Length: 264
Ligand SMILES: CC(C)(COP(=O)(O)OP(=O)(O)OC[C@H]1O[C@@H](n2cnc3c(N)ncnc32)[C@H](O)[C@@H]1OP(=O)(O)O)[C@@H](O)C(=O)NCCC(=O)NCCS
Image 1 (spheres, rainbow, N blue to C red):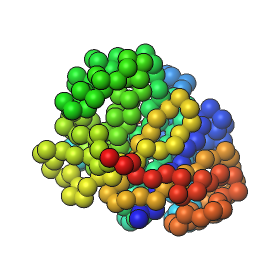
Image 2: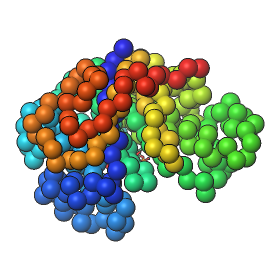
Image 3: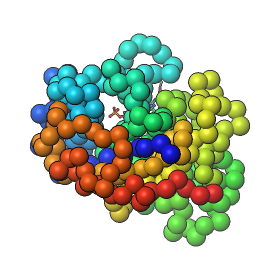
């Protein structure tokens, strides 16, 4: 089993605490957001990456360097899968939706994560035609109309988790990634796709959201909820082993056994 830590944080609750952790460039970038909600998510996402990076690398948060690796170009732009410079054995994935930021983190396998807000207004018929495999679409159509949007978003998060693990993002057509079983399946994997099967796990998240994790090994998930960013930043090491007690006094931990890979 591969240990994976999953962090869930509320961007509204932590807004004030997150900003001081950002670099000057990130602070300048955050000021350019028009949407307050999107700005809060960006700020918390970067603050969390710095806080966890600081603990992992044993350096102050301001010295954590977040890189991005794009599979399609090498222009060095701020896009593609994030990684921590100086931590080659670590893989992590970030997602945000509604008011939550989700971050999956492992030094034992590759990870991809996605969270979506259960927005009842979406049209699963319209979106499904572009993003679901035929079998997934048939299963969705067989459900009562009231259940379709939640199931569509569940499938969507599984697909996005897989393409984010690989670093391809939406450059891979989502309809080609079949996720109605315990692993993600592609008839013709694109260049650079992992050779290992991608295990899919439904993550426990607050009501109103759905989230999925993709991993290159069967995961043992420890879920952490952060309620205070100010305690311990830059000092407490992130434990690699799941434990009953949190290394961070401000972090609530659920037992590792709470989340298991999805059965078929
Ligand atoms: C990654 C992607 C699937 C995320 O979609 P989303 O549902 O809107 O956003 P989420 O909140 O779930 O995830 C956003 C996070 O995914 C991460 N991410 C971005 N691109 C990624 C990639 N290719 N692989 C893995 N993770 C990626 C980032 O950490 C990003 O957060 P940040 O921008 O705040 O740093 C989508 O934006 C995408 O495919 N982008 C890449 C497109 C691309 O590669 N174009 C070619 C450029 S040359």
